[in-house]
Amino acid sequence: MTALLRATGLWKAFGEREVLRGVDVEVAKHEVVALIGASGSGKSTLLRCLGLLETIDDGQILLADQDISDPRVDANRIRARFGAVFQSYNLFPHLSVLENVTLASRIVHDVPRREAEQRGLALLDRIGLADLAKEHPDRLSGGQQQRAAIVRAIATEPEVLLLDEITSALDPELVGEVLGLVSELAADGATILMATHEMAFAREVAHRIVFLDGGEVLEEGPPEQVLAAPREERTREFLSRFLA
Amino acid sequence: MTVHQPSELELDRRRYRRSRGRRSVLVAIGSTLAFALIVWLTIVNTPGWSQVQRAFFDPEIAWASLPRVWDGFLLNLQVMGLSVITVGACALVIAVLRTLRGPVFFPLRALAAAYTDLFRGIPFIIVLYIVGFGIPTIVGVRIPPIVLGVIAVTLTYSAYVSEVIRAGIEAVHPSQRLAARALGLRHGQTMRRIVLPQALRKMTPPLMNDFVSMQKDVGLISILGAVDAVRAAQIIQGQTYNFTPYVVAGLLFVLLAIPTIRLTDWYTARLRTREQSGSLL
Image (tube, rainbow over the protein chains, first blue to last red):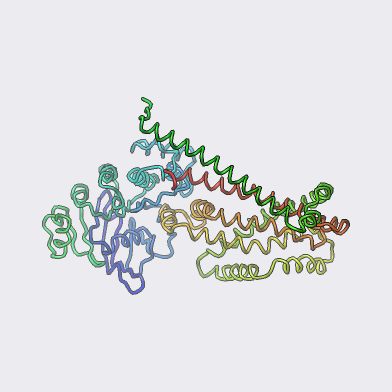
């Protein structure tokens, strides 16, 4: 299996604090990889570094065998090939839901407005938000906002989706609708790297689990192995807090 | 869909609130009338009131001076109208220059910073003298005072307004920029589509403050010899030895400021209701 996205030896420090300490991670096409680990273990930073939303201090990132960590590549072009969804949605409050969804298509990918809107409406219709397309994001519930944010990320058909704890800010009853959408995308063959605290969901949807601890990959493997029979003591300790 | 019928309890509450509302209005009207009466009687019975009235509030002179003061006021309006455009454009450019990153832009950033420091520090009247009397001596051609006024106002107010714009830009949460860049938008696109529109909403109140302040300072162009509202009032005052024309000119400026202030309140309220659900306590 050749990796679509491959990072080797990633280092990243914020001042004195080393957040990533030589991380190797790879995601194959159509693969769903879940990043687990305690808060502060470097999950979010890793996702941001991979999506070129943060500079790295060392290491290399390859997207479809192209070195995207090379400063000579046009980072804007590369970012447009990723889709990113954040914990706090980050929808644009001054734009309608539909405008949020079509913005990148129109501005970055030069899709004509009509075409972008048709596509955007079709996507919103699929997640049952077509009626709210003209509303501004603050009128939506948290779950609706996050689903709209996911649609915004996939509207440009990105090669890799980076999901950063997308259900952490949601009420338990709203988590389901967001994870349901991610499961659908995974079933459709999307390539996903997601940081999550939803272990049951990770077990069900992810093909592989990567356990990050103190900025290093401590353990990785299929969900049934990492979640059910972890090799490392730290992993067991971390998981026991979720089962308690 | 069935229409909800309010319960007897709710109807009673509504009756109570209505009666309280009526009472509040009546109390407000009553107290305002009583207050106005007391103020009026106090002023009228103050010794020397008649002199004050004659010197500042002579209705005949006010009426007679209005046409000429109004003609002058139109000049103020022109300077103001033009300045709004020039100040807006210059201030935006300066503010954006100050937010540019990267070593190439260092000289531009430094220049913009120096400019805002300098022109926020210099009293407007000095700028007005330098521009109004200095530039014509160098150029050697007659420049209409309206142009000189616009230049002076633009120099000073662009510095103030650019700081307001910059503060507005920085008040937009970084996560918005992050989300925009994650979609592949470039720095300029992110600025234009995401940051500036949101910054504008945050900027409106302080911006209007500067705008009202500018409306008043436009009255200073009278020192350039232009016959604006203030100068017209001064001429009439010289002829009549009565200060009422100044009051007339002052009132015109106040009347101009009020709609601006109300318009801002209305605009910000409208944006808020459109983008936020729920009521504000």
